Amino acid sequence: MAEVVGTYNPKKVTMALGRHIASGFADDSFISIEFQGDGTTSVTGADGEIIRSIDPNSQAIVKLVLLQSSTTNKFLIEQHYKDKESGEGVFPVSIKDLLGKTSFSASVAWVPKLATRAYGKAANMVEWEIHTGASELSQK
View 1 (cartoon, rainbow, N blue to C red):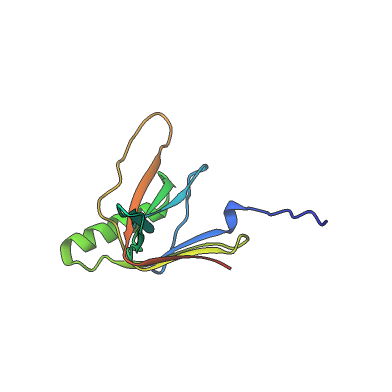
View 2 (cartoon, rainbow, N blue to C red; view 1 turned 90 degrees about the vertical axis):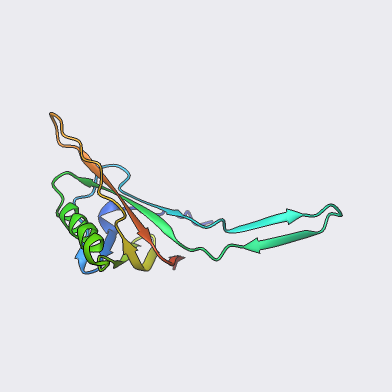
């Protein structure tokens, strides 16, 4: 039997926020995606009959952890204020693992609030939340 060996390289994970290519990622876990819907739930009646409900909600919260010096911080700040002022701070988001063939996309995303900032002796990380409309995760 042939041994299967996979490869992961964080440099092969790309993230596009509209036309902005995110960069300056944290050195540990830098992107996480949390889906907001309940998926499929079920209820069992008193007689044992079961009904399933499929939640159509495909919204997600993308958490992005950046170096304090990342230019992506500026982009996200600008989008947040643009959205607050005119409602036009939305953008598509696309995340791809080029080696693992996993991709995530949403045609509408926004920055609901500014990231918390911390200053100390050494540079800190900045964690952002990006909320999406309908989203899709695929594995090719």
